[in-house]
Length: 126
Image 1 (cartoon, rainbow, N blue to C red):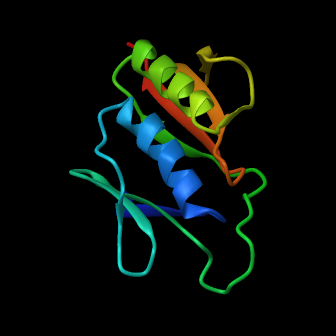
Image 2: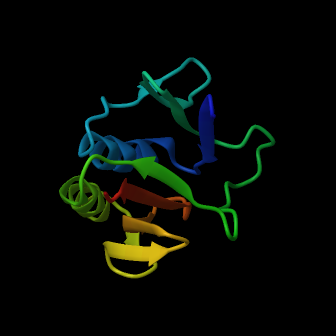
Image 3: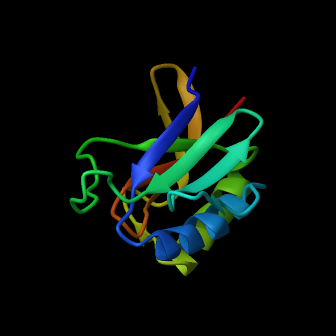
C-alpha cells in the first residue's frame, strides 16, 4: 500500500544511529545519506526515511501518529525494542507484549525515537 514513509528529525546523525540499531535488529541495512542530507532505509517492500523539515522549522512528532515496522517474531520485536532503547530511544506505551482486540492477536513493542516520533514493532500472531 505504501511506497515510503518519511519522518522529521532534528539531528540526522543521532536519529541515524538509533534507526541503524533498531532496524538492524530486524534485518535492515544501515541507512544511506542522500545528497540532500536525508537518511534512507531501502528494502524490497518500500523506503523509510528521516529528514530535517524542508521548511526549516524544528521537527515535531505527530500527536496520535504511529509508524509500525513488521517483524517476524516476538523475539525480533524484543531485539528491535532493546536496540532502540540502547541507542537513544525512549519507552512509551505498555511494555512489549501481546495485545488482543478486533479479533486480532498482536505482539507489539513501542518506542519514541530521538526526535519524539512514536514507532512500533508488530508481529501478527497465528
